[in-house]
View 1 (cartoon, rainbow, N blue to C red):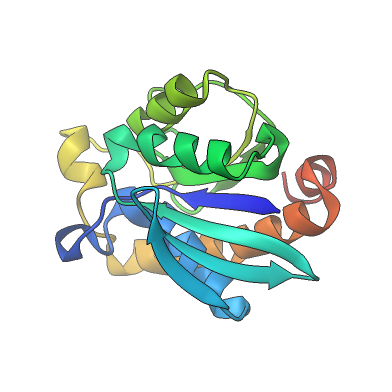
View 2: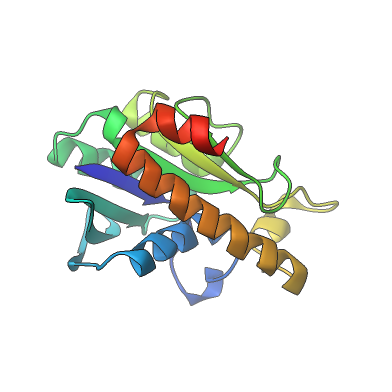
Length: 183
């Protein structure tokens, strides 16, 4: 079993914001594959899909961004999963809008959702996909909680399509193949 966690904030107020690009990435994967079951557990909405026979959980933490680890850690423990079976998708202000980067492990880069997950799991040794949202000239909070412009939206749609391809490759062929093919 594989687990894909998309980071974002729950609720209509945050729908379509830059900070919720991780949620949108999960929606792209769900669009491509039949969601067999959806449930609410571990402070998350969890969609169950299969990619080439492999069971995959699509996880949207409902804990708000800064507490994402409180949703991810109990799920990983309950299913007795290794960190190699986890990938997290989130926004990154240090990447140009629409850029997609895959890493096998690493620090949080100052992203509070990733900081929470790393702290709760006690490790940074899990895969992640960063989707660039660009850096603001003004206040970062207003930027990440703001919506994409029309021009940015087209870039994001392309990034989400690419992210779906990366995630499918990761499930089918592993992190090394996905990094070689998509980075």
